[in-house]
Length: 159
Image (cartoon, rainbow, N blue to C red; front, side, top):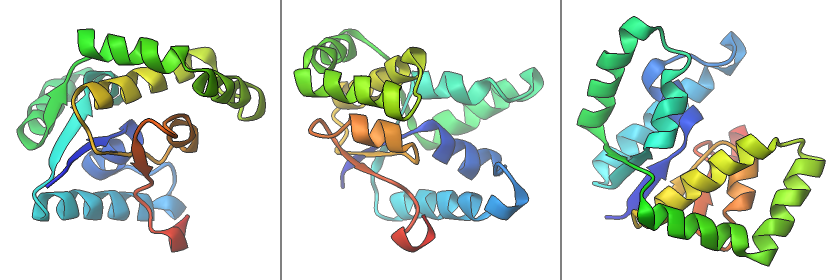
């Protein structure tokens, strides 16, 4: 059994069941398949509270309490704490990671806010001893290089 951390879009597609378009409904199917696989294999699943906040934004206010209740039944919601802050400083202080951040801003047009949130998600995963971070966000996966194993939830044939 390992500890896995889930990023925003995978949870949104799998739990809310809405894909960006009808043509992309396979994202919902694959996210739900990942959830079943993680459950069947007995993995400990972490969801950073930063991710929870991102998930709540598009939901109508009336649905938020129910969503929080459901997600906290299924998985462990973990906060950005002092240990995460120490990881954040370590990651941001790393010269190779700083180079990756600059490259992502320039070449992938990632905003500073977006990248700070990604570093906070990564730091939270590390602080809570995640073994794997599942994300569909190529920028986050690239940023996590050398820090934590990352995986896209889609099989290679569907990417």
